[in-house]
Image (cartoon, rainbow, N blue to C red; front, side, top):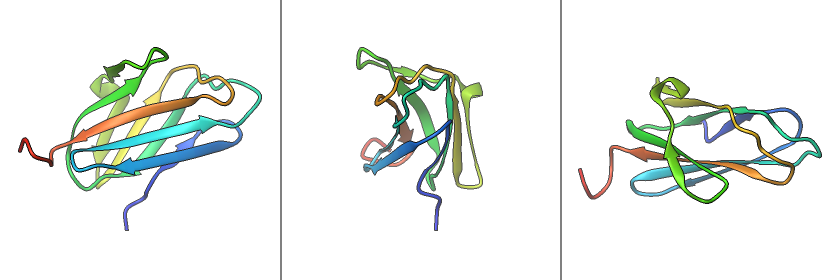
Length: 102
């Protein structure tokens, strides 16, 4: 089967994945006493990803540039260069090419 979610970050990580009809939500919670300065994620995604967005501290989502992620062989890989404080999370939404609007 497809890789659900792998997160590469320093120390203890609590990964989360929720699949919706037209998007996939990915998150990684920092369970350490020190902040992360970035992390990488890999997740199995069978449908083509149209857009990838990351949630900012104020709750708004902003698009990640194409150079920060790629999809090949059914695996979505992304690199986040953002500070994640202890007991905080990095959250990403991957919009797929499936759903009601296609």
